[in-house]
Image: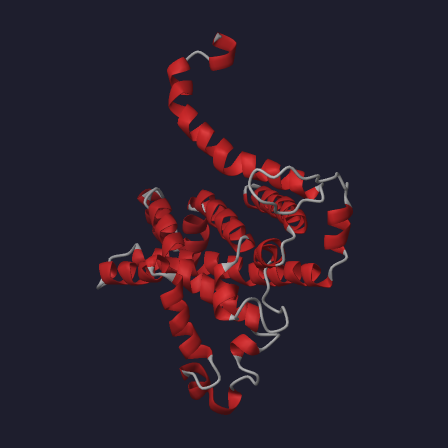
Length: 291
C-alpha cells in the first residue's frame, strides 16, 4: 500500500479528483479518438449494435493523401509562425512597460485584458467592420489597400486571423509576464544601472533571463491554443475561406466529422495534430530551457 500511495497517502487523496478529471476529460476522449481512427467508425442510433471493422492505417492514408488536410496543416504552421513570436514579443514588451510606474497604469492593464474576456462573436463583428472591402482599414490605406480585401484574400486571410488572435489573447499573456516580473530581483536592475547599462541592455541582460520560465510557458500555451484554432476562422472567414486558405485542422475535423459524418477520418486528423503539437512543444521547450 505504501508503494502504491507513497509516504503521504493523504496527498494521493487530494490529487485524486484532478486525476479523475484528467482521465475523464482528456485521457478517455484521446484514447477513444485513437480507437476510432483505426476503425471504420460511423455514427449510429443510441443502443444500436453495428459492425465497425478494424481498418488499420487506412484512415491515416486517406487523410495524408487529402490535399485539403495538407493545406490545413500548412495554414496552421503559417498561423503559429506569425502568432507565437508576435505574442511573446508584444506581451513581454508591454508587460515590462506596465510594470513601471506609468500614468494610468491600471487603465492600460484593464484595456489590454478586455478583448480576452469579451465574447468572440462581438469582437469578430468589429474586425469584420474594420477589414472588409469598405472597412476602416482599407479607407485609411486608400490605394495601398489589398485587392481582394484582407479576409477574402488567399495570401492575407490566415495572417489576418493570426494577428486577430494575437490581439485578443494579449491581455492574458501580459498578466503572466507581469507576475513573472515581480520575481526578478531589484538588485539585478541596480547592478545593471551601476555598470552603466542602458534600457535595452538592462532589458536584454536582466529582464529576459529573469522571465525565461514565463517565456517557456507563454510559448507552449500559445502553440497549444493556436493548434486548436477553430472559432476565429469559422467566424472571420466564413468557415476557412477563401478556398480553404484559412482552414485549420480542428475546423476541418468539425467539417469532416460532424457535417460530413466521417468521425473516423476526423479522428485520424486529430491524432496527427496531437502528435505534431506535442513534437513542436517538446522542441520549443528544449530550445527555451537550454543554457
